[in-house]
Image (cartoon, rainbow over all chains, first blue to last red; front, top):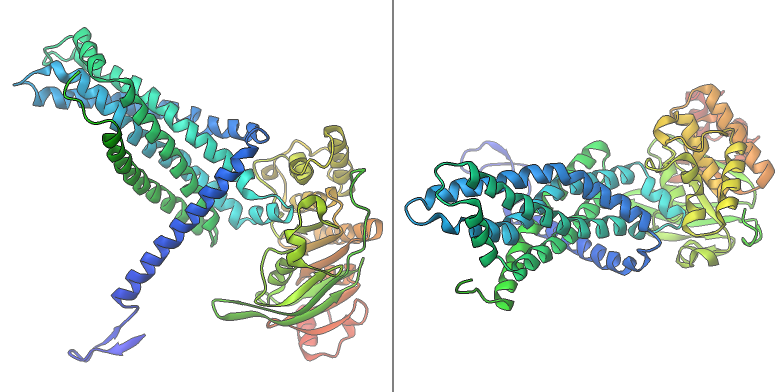
Length: 280
Length: 254
């Protein structure tokens, strides 16, 4: 709508007001959250048919997990290495004996889960949103419905189960490689005063089973979030290839935000359930 | 067709006062239409007149704002709510793009509904797939992926998918879109052959008038969301309705 500005007399495009846009934005967020929640419940319900759809689950597990192994290894290796380099420099005037525990705790409790969550959301989550989005705009989802085939057990459930299993497994893998990366730097960097045995001694003293479990629980939750959000955005796709691109980007952005929020909630819950220790 | 499947029934379609709007823009404005059991109705009209929207309502992919659709006397909503095995008849739609699942082979696409609903044993499914592909002249393509097929082949596989469930109602959305005239004729022959051999109730949405002429028992002209002309397949081409005359003239049929 074009109206005349009272002060300048110049015609300006009023457009929707700030409050209108804010309201529309909030409404959109609530709508998407509601769709994701409904899809999550429906997917959980359809997990009862997991045996029947085991081949699809396996194929998705390969796609989300196996095919991410090399990139996950590369990223985890460098995360572990850079952490030791950074921490060693900061600790040079104090003690570098705590490098093992620092890398171990950071990898198992925080960096491993979050980095793997982001990687899988960016790689497999975007692929899911794009695949389902293309199916939507090409009427493949509609074709399934005309054949009385519910897309939730057929498309969403296998991806949900695969993603929920894949991320925790990748986290374990990432933990091992990240810690190994740290050890490589400890062994080769002349500015580090501790040896590899000392690095691992300190790590095993501080990292316990609960820390690993907390990391794996994060992985389970991140996997569910990424799968549901990616599928929900796939189903929301309209408008041809531009719509697919839009859905894919939104799915990744929403997954990242959901991962960070869930990470905070799980960390708070973990501190309540397993209060921080004073020492090894 | 599976041995224990429901006995074939002939399914008439009854559409009454169907209204549909999108974002306040009316697309269907009180459509009333009957399709007799076993006949082929062709709905013609220009692009954006609501032809595809109409058949998406018939198969239950869209829900009307007002009005009813009954198939063999059964309201579409009640039909959709029934569990698959309790449905008294089968419906299928051949989409404009074919809408084959790209990750599945031709055989897997054709047999998808049978496999998912466990309607037949493996060897029987293989036989049905072979027969249906042979019926649409697509033998030997079982292991191909949709990406390896031409547009016309994809549409024939989509028709085979409808035949595999022995659909009593088949809806075709622009079955000849993006095909050359020779393929248009082949698709037309296929639609005719299916009606002759299996006698399903068929609705064909198209703006391809030679196809309409080839297959129609009745033709309905859709304009601005309303049926403005409805005649038998022979009479339609002699219609004196101004909109029909204009449409036929534009298509150089008269």
